[in-house]
Image (cartoon, rainbow over all chains, first blue to last red):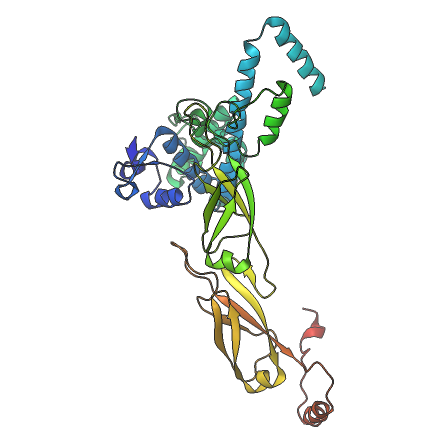
Length: 112
Length: 304
């Protein structure tokens, strides 16, 4: 967990007030410090990685403030979907071989 | 010609602007976080980013052109991408969205013989709930509180922030379906449609309005009442105003909110003749026109 002040040293080219704006827009959802959000935010690793992504979208890919939430929402959905697919795959994985093969056959049938 | 120029697909004499554009185009196509499932994207993006690191910097590019930096003279970019966190790990669920997968839930509940499933879907956090809400134009412009009833019977007071746009989605964290087995609840997503108002047209944070004027008001000037999103204001129409003139009411557009400054209202004047033909006006204008000819289509025949 790191604080807002530490962010610029971890994510190159990002300004504290920029990130605070992103928090207000809820593009990033850090955890409030003990004693409430007035005392600042704590950023987990996933928040830092997300800030790095938003910086890339904003600075390098030149996406505007209107486009970024669209991209983030689609990415969140993709990660949600990938998670659900992995759960499904795991459920198939633990089935007896015969059932797994029947599922694979059926998949090949629908894909064709 | 250096290999790095090939990576970005530009000529070695390309301008800084051309290089920036080429990099942006490639980065959009290969950024690993925009291709969460493509393992090769990261390798490709590394090459592109390494080329951009040198060619995008005036000094480094000059040194590269002089041969002082080699094609692989740059330390490899080692960084972690968002997808590594969003895909797995203790925090992966934080931003993942299940919104819009309700149809999948249907598909799978059919597949599994109708066995009851947690509303959260696949054992992750609670599912997101989606709701549509229509608000009046003025409520969206000024902000309002709306009471909504959810499909499960709960009612909630929703704060519509001033200046909300048509189609915007409000996300209420933790107000969606409760999570199973100690997982966090889902979010409530409210997609807000803004009903149009025949008087006002919104462009950005400005409001456009057409204001009809009588002939007398346009010719002689007047003070008229004009509706704005925040109430009626008295507007002075200068003498000799014409159709198409635009008067700006500063700060009378969409109200400011947070760091956003208030927009303006732009009033476009439209001179209206009386609805019924009028003999007295005809006579007056006939007498006036003979003595004061003017050509309102001046310049039109030149075709530009």
